[in-house]
Image (tube, rainbow, N blue to C red; front, side, top):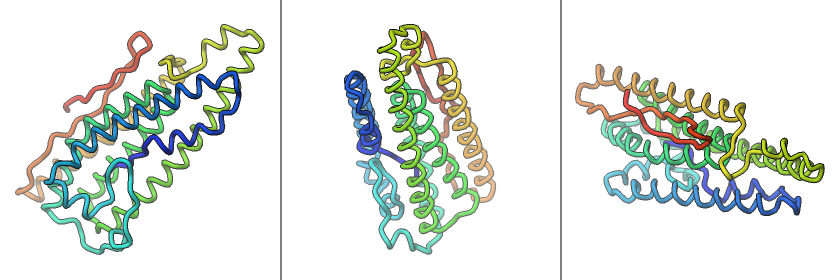
Length: 252
C-alpha cells in the first residue's frame, strides 16, 4: 500500500527549467529520472506478476505506476480480513527491496529528490501500521492512498521549482565565473553538499523508525492473532561513501 510516483510526474516537474545554457544538465537529470522510474517499475511489476497477490490489487489501488482507486474501491465498507492482512504484509515484505532500490536511485540523482521519495515510502509504512492496529475498511485505505498521492504530487512540484531555481543559480554562477560556487551545485552527477546529504540521511532514519514501528505492531498483532505468520520486515539504511550514495536493507 505504498505510494508510487513514476517518471512521468517527475519529468513534468522539470519543464519549468528553460535556461538554455543549463539545458544539457536538465536533460541529463530528466534521463536519469526516467531510467530510475523504469527500473523501479520493473521491480514492482515482478511482484505484481505473482498471481498470489491478485486479491491485493483487486481490493486496493496499489502498484507502480499508481492507478486511481475505482468508486467501488473508495466506497468499500468491508474491513480487512485476516487472510488479506497476511497476504498484504507478505506483499509489503517482498516489496521492500524495490523500495530500497527506489530510495538509492532517486537519492543518487539528487538528495532533495531522494527525500521526497523516502517520505512517500515512509507514509506507506505508517499506513501499514495503522492497518495492523485498527483493521480499517478497504475504502478507508484507498482514501488514504488518494490523500498520500495528492501530497506526493505537491511535493514533486516543489522539488521541480527548487531544481529550476538551482539551475538558474548555476547559470548565474557560470556567467560570473564563480567556479568554486558552481562546484557546490547538486546535479545528476552524484555530488551532494553536506547539508543536503544530512537532510536526506535524516529522512532515511525517519523511514527506518516507521519500519521499526511497523515491525513492533506486527509483534503485537501476533499476540492477538496466533494464526498469523510474521513476515520479515527490514529497515532501510543509507550512507555516502566517497560521495556516492549506497543503501541496503538491514534486519532488526
